[in-house]
Length: 70
Ligand SMILES: [Zn+2]
Image 1 (cartoon, rainbow, N blue to C red):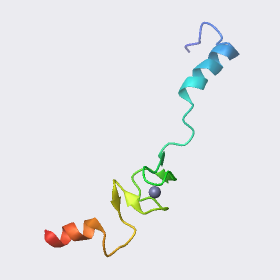
Image 2: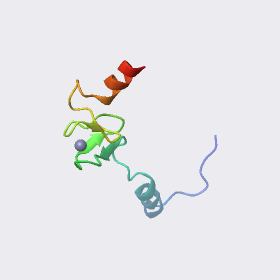
Image 3: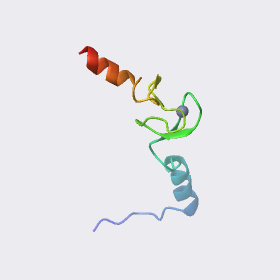
């Protein structure tokens, strides 16, 4: 069995983890419109915006309009 030649010191181990493991929760971003924390690739729960479009009202949703035209 392969065994590490030297013990990694606490300082060296912690330095490595400090840089790599900083990202606590992936898939969380700030809404560009209202600044609220949102899940990525989801419509903002606070202002109903996704990719610069407002999806808060179902009747006026841009996706629905595009579907009618096509
Ligand atoms: Zn928002």
